[in-house]
Amino acid sequence: MLYDNLTINEKGHLCMAGMDTAELARQYGTPLYLMDEERITGRMRTYKSAMSGYFGAGSLPFYASKALCCRRILELAKAEGIGVDVVSAGELYAAESVDFPMDRICFHGSCKTKAEIDYAVRLGVGFFICDNAEELRRIDAAAAKCGVRQSVLLRVTPAIDPHTFAAVATGLIDSKFGLPIPTGQAREFTRLALSLKSVVLRGFHCHIGSQIFDKQPLCDAATVMAGFAADMRDELGYSAEIIDLGGGFGVPYVESEPEIDIDDTIRLVAEHYKAEMSRRGFGETAVFMEPGRSIVGDSGLTLYEIQDVKTIPGLKNYVAIDGGMTDDPRYALYQSRYTMLLANRAGERADTLYTVGGRCCESGDMLGEDISLPEARVGDLLCVLTTGAYNYSMASHYNCVPRPPIVMLRDGKSYTAVRRESFREMLACQFDDT
Ligand code: LLP
Image (cartoon, rainbow, N blue to C red):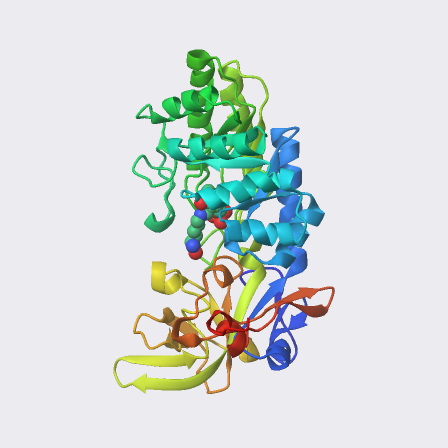
């Protein structure tokens, strides 16, 4: 099995966290997202202890809530004492709704509106990760209006290729995010921040991309950030207190992808970062990171019921499921690979190839091609692994398909963290009385 929380019971059913997923599908219906709570909190703890242990005092992971902005996960992050990274007023609102401590929130995003900035300053978020000069001026004006001084980190692009898929590579010079170091724009950005009265420059941020397995680009980014921090000290007399290295640790979706040892990778990056800083005579800084996928990705799976099986002779076998791009657009967007199996026949040999088609009226609505399954039958439960990140959060209402529920598993029990959307809820904004 791809992960150690997955087993097969005596009925041949797939179990997650010791619970029979076929039984859960019967109880809650399909499509259904299932999540293993202990695995999520375990990841949060690993990040927290590794970061304070290897980077030192004040260092903290901020859960990137774009991966799955679910109030229950935010409650877990709050209880575990980690921070949260939000990228919109909506994500901030979700954090506010669980009384998340504002001093542990980073407000991110490459295009924050004035209304969003005002809202976040008013709430007193700990840090803005500021994308560009115009935005910095807007934050300064909002803070002045509120009579506060707002902590900011500046997002800079270190020109590092993270060796991941193009849609999620963000640290190259040609990027819509942040301002590049090599062009000198990051330095001018710093100069501007130091000149403004109502922002307090606390340090610098970079995020080179997502689904990264190679440790070298992470170390290279640390080197560039250490160099930039030292240059700003030497050129502008400014010493950063915090360096934020972003998120991006990869998660194996298929057997051929490696599993990243989070603790060990942080140890390695921290050793490298500290050596680079001390080589430049820089004292200790706090370090932030923003893991999303590696906190929730492999804690989730999705169950669908197979509605139809179709063979085009000499060409292909298709299975049609009761979900698809509306609950998981990642294959349609990035041709992302997944591991799939039949949850009700998990022990059987997977010797037939299928194309998994979603229910939407769109040829691109697929979850995978050339997927090995046992010979599939109508009523079988198709399970897609590793759907905890960027599935529910990217779900849509295309074809007026309501969003599935998220059911959490903990201590041998299940509970609903997000209930199944009703048709009425899906259309709520179209009725006058809601
Ligand atoms: N920090 C920043 C500034 C980010 O842009 C992201 C992800 C993260 C942290 C978290 O990265 P993670 O640890 O999750 O790799 N929808 C795509 C992924 C988009 C990632 C966007 N930014 C997917 O489904 O693969």
